Image (cartoon, rainbow, N blue to C red):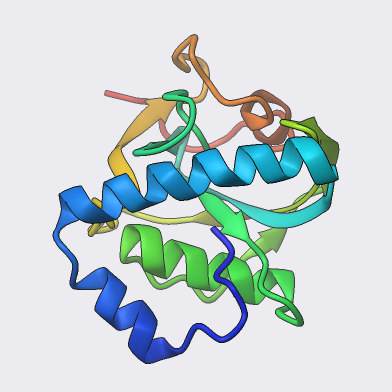
Length: 172
């Protein structure tokens, strides 16, 4: 989620030290307020979606706020931040994974919850990464075979994953 202007690294660090239950509550409240804002203002929103694959497996996450669909990790782009840097930041913050080399996929545009989305999509191939989830923002993460995705995937997920070439190893 986009941080308001004036948020310092110290404030972000203090937020991260709050108990998980409090952070989850704050994310839910912020999301509800954003939904109202998006409905009224119909803003342009710019974000990233970060597709992580391990062969033919793809990582999907569930957020602690909003719909409970399985989503591709990602988030908002900060003002003046290059999209690839946002992808690096989001995977570090949400998943505890540092990825330097991203392959750009096509941008995805659409309307969701009143806002006009432009999503910069990136792909990185990883091998057995150790994930450290931000449990305030994410309730879980799971690897799925690309040909056996769950039925409850997010609005843009199928379109983004369709951009990936089919290759690698299959799920066990």
